[in-house]
Image 1 (cartoon, rainbow, N blue to C red):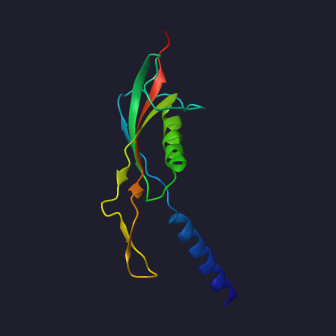
Image 2 (tube, rainbow, N blue to C red):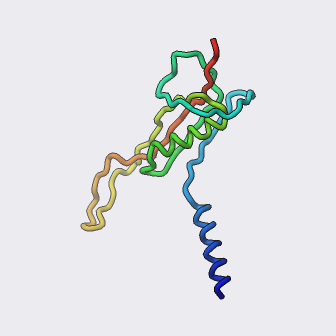
Image 3 (cartoon, rainbow, N blue to C red):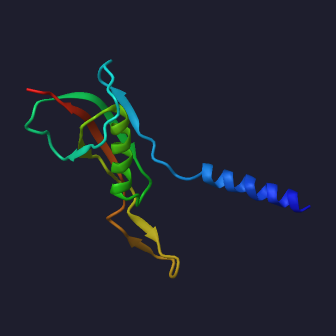
Length: 130
């Protein structure tokens, strides 16, 4: 009996770990050239002044209230795997259509205008040697 309950505990542990939320990064390669993984990825909000080549476009979307750092980290990890030296990130977060939420204590609605679904688009780049 003890081994059966132990087996169920192990099964449920693996089940819950497999259900953990992970951001899915969509990648669109922009060329056929491959690079070895990079060690660091610079995060940029606008195009750099140095010459560069685009190697991929990436998109990530999180659940409501997902922290920006979590999503940017997922993009950065994927960029490292692709061999990118920098990421140009654009915020494409979408406001939630109905900003009203029910107040369970009184049955009335409260307005929450700061509700949005976080989404980011990024371009993975490598700098060109001059």
